[in-house]
Image (spheres, rainbow, N blue to C red):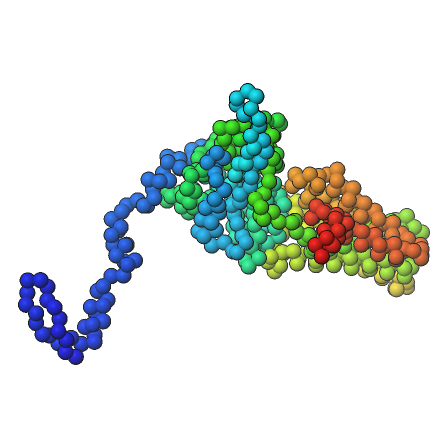
Length: 489
């Protein structure tokens, strides 16, 4: 086609022939806005915001005996949640998933001048993973899905190792790890370690408009000593690593340092309006605890009859043993549904050196196998009377069953007691779990002697156990839940 083009200034216009290909080539020579921006800043050897955040980072990496840590100035935090948004955006979190949270410290404190009334205070607290010196998530993980970097001290979660059991949420006093339903795993803050490796600040540090968050280096020994002294009794004159309403710093030794020019005595921790969520019921865990403890107690009743009886077994013994065995197997099957990755359940015993969840799984697995053997021997002895099972074999299997039931119950107690949560402490958890087993033993003995009320009582007590386990996880009683729901209706 024939077009007229304008030559550069200082030359005469001329007529030339231009094809469609020439037009496309000319168009390709034009740079886009993104390309022009990239070309303009191609010679910049440092990030554009480096002058802003360089003062918020240590001048050098941690040395021996040190690690990275967050430092938060409570007097500067305005609860704008810019850090929350930046963390969510950079890490590509799911809707409703957050690795950084905001809480409030509210209360009143006396004014400096004499005779003045107390002033009301509301301090915002931004918090994420504390990258503890002794992280509970790492010790509790049954599949070794956590790693603490020996140089930086950053506690990282290994997504490919996780099976989604959520036990790290229990063992972390601050409930830092968050479960991602879309991925079936737990995830958490990793201090933006990729940015730190290249000398760039984490997203939350860069996003805070008040420079309330910074990265610092802390001494592991000094942090441990300070946390233990604060846990033994601190007046919170300087926030340190503990705040009002936070769990004892001695549990995991958090490294986050909170600063404030004012005393925090008399303040209490409260969630930001709308951010507090009710605790989950964890129905698969409720089913697992109730069924394994009731099944184990029922089998224990038969085992006691084998050890203390006259050696003559009946069909009733076989039926009761079968019911108990089915309860144990049903409980183990129910527990798998609590995992985000059920097909990876076989890996749950990898952390047996430090994780009580691994030890519980191993103990219950062995107990399950012995319960099947014990039930099978009872059935053979009852229905194949021509070839009775030797009494020593039955007695030995019964003794092993009782011992394994004791070990499995103790492991179940420790799974929750070691978390440090007040409702799950030993003095509260032992009576609950042991009481359930003993109730099952009593009902099983009632079955064996042919008591008519045993079936109905067993169902009622099992329902009571379910309600009690629901209260164990949610922290609410059934009566309170019913009254609240009725009030809403």
